Length: 261
Ligand code: AMP
Image (cartoon, rainbow, N blue to C red; front, side, top):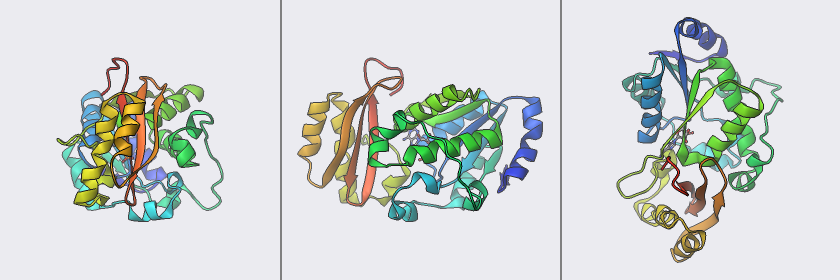
């Protein structure tokens, strides 16, 4: 497995891969768990070359405390990537992605300003910009995203369509722990008691009914609701975001017989 730090070395390392076959890209912020492993497994099965990016993108964090507490363990992530059959990990320092004087942003205007975008202004601008830049650097045939972040997948789908990026978007089902909590790098920040309270989110969304979900969350001490909304993504979902202590969690369930859980 090759690890690259710069745009230039990534481009040159991938030249033969582009000549020879398909390239699958799995963008991550690290702290890899079984949700990421599911994306890496699909990418491995469907492409000749698998690229994983490992970059905690500062532009998608509004809150500096959220950025500074985000779990990071590069050695562990590189070992997990290697085990998953990744061919190349692109793990740039922030300056490589945001060089001094950086001022060019991509904004998915409407979709990016609702739900998560409303509670995290600028978040999807950061996501869309870094995803476009990662696509441009690695030129994937396919890119892999999780349904866990349903709005992110919708934003990327719109970005690909609007800018004719020619990348096939693959969205994989949400991977959950046995107790129902969707796997997330931020789960590591929950105390045992907070984790117990956080289970109200998947339980509430499983009702597939906004009012019932809000009632369940409203009856749970220590859970603050940002929103629970039906979102007309493809497929449509009931999506929710809550805060448990200082950790913010999002989750969603597919509505109307959609294929992705
Ligand atoms: P992150 O490292 O949190 O930015 O996530 C990288 C990718 O993994 C994104 O496309 C996420 O949607 C996806 N992902 C995160 N958690 C899960 C999960 N529990 N199940 C499936 N995919 C996930």
